[in-house]
Image 1: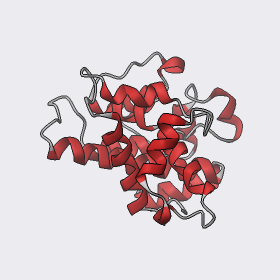
Image 2: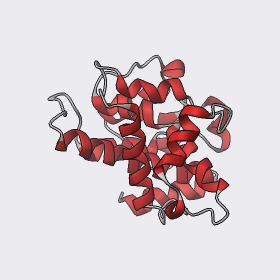
Image 3: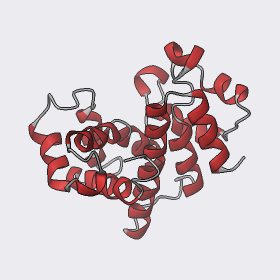
Length: 196
């Protein structure tokens, strides 16, 4: 099944904001992979870029309909129902986005990336929606950084402590402001896909 078909399923089966969040996380995952590759920080045990992207796109596949209350526990059932499949490696990346539910702690770069970037996408969207135009093209990185660091009540659902773990030496080892910039620029460059 190709990406367009997967996105159609997401938009059909999930609330639109969840589907768009999934696309945003896929975009961030690709950008983090590229950053690590360019900077020689990928490791031998890191999955392929395709797996990073697919896990990002499908990480919330069970966050809708009859599965929503059991999010993270019904991933396989949702995939099966919608005719989708992931490799064991991709399933582990997906489960790493919510270790408090799955007990799968991030180990490789892909797992750290999905864990750290998941809720950051929501903050970037929230900053955008404050602008009169509601267009990501008009948002400045400095606004996102300010809201992240200095306004903890803004987009309070953002798990800032998880995002900050991007700096962990045993994980991605990316400075927090750089990590935010990677995700922000990636989303901005693909704003049409996430309807911003």
